[in-house]
Length: 440
Image 1 (cartoon, rainbow, N blue to C red):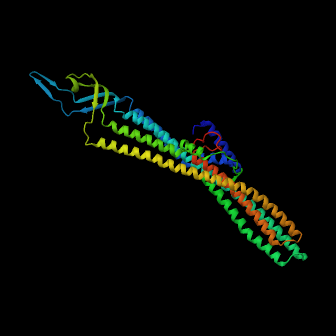
Image 2 (spheres, rainbow, N blue to C red; image 1 turned 180 degrees about the vertical axis):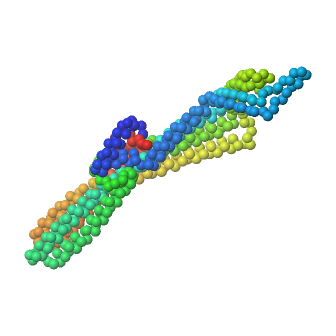
Image 3 (cartoon, rainbow, N blue to C red; image 1 turned 135 degrees about the vertical axis):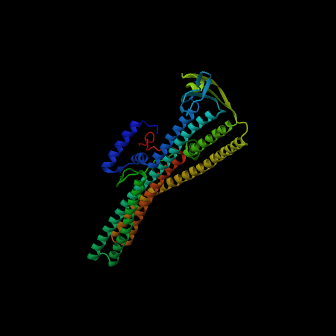
């Protein structure tokens, strides 16, 4: 949002050109594209623009007010004064008047300053709300991106397993033809291939769904491909550190504190209604004969002074309004505590999920290595006639399961890291600097 506008335009243009040519996204590219093109993010950006105008409106109350009024009046007849031989018209049938007035508010019981502070807080609140929306969008895009990676890798595992089973099927048929294997082995091999195909087809369908989900999130119209890997680097985060960061950086908490600040300014504004309003004013008025004398010439007069208005009794309306605003302020203060409690719970849940994913990731690495070794041994035993085809295919199934479990562990760990960042308000490292601006 604070990024140099030209840099963002160039980055966005380069990204669109890159996407249009091959529709391939890394995670940083997907995040930039989604943040730039999401219409809800653009709508939130407009709230900041509205808040800027509110600051100008509040500041206008403290500036001098200038007004100009012009009036023309036509009389059906003019009164006359008869002094014997002489008759005088009292005025003119055509009457003109011009009046200019300037006034300056010098005291309003704190209403102007409260309105100005509230407008600035409103702008900060709108900015924080946009930050919260974008943080959630970053998390959702990250999850969808890792979902595509998981689906793609799962298709590769299913494809490799199916290829291996088809090789086993061909071996079983060759052995049956030479009399080295039974018909049962050949039939079992065909059944295992037939059973593996629906899982391979389901994995491909899941990949298509994952791609569609990501494309919908980033508002990309067309087929896409992702490239990259799961984020599996170890972290040194501790729960107390994450909780401290969340208290300071989580956007929802910041927004709640700003709403509490707005409620305090609302109390100050309500109290100002019970205090006097003092203005300086000056008035310059010009008119023809009807206004000032009996001649036909224009005359100009001016007045200046101080005006004071104090609402001494309004049926207790101001008092009740102040009481309402104070109650609302206390509600906002309780709301901060409620949101903080929910945020800290979310941080703890995310941290526990990260620990679980870390342990699963470490365990899955050994499982894959063991399953690969077991398949090698089973293949050797089968070629030597020391085991059945069922043992060989069971070893292949165990390897496929271990590889899928390993992929799921990588996916869960990467998502858990993204969830930690979202829960604590830690910026994503995949956005090099600031989040991109939203171009109109």
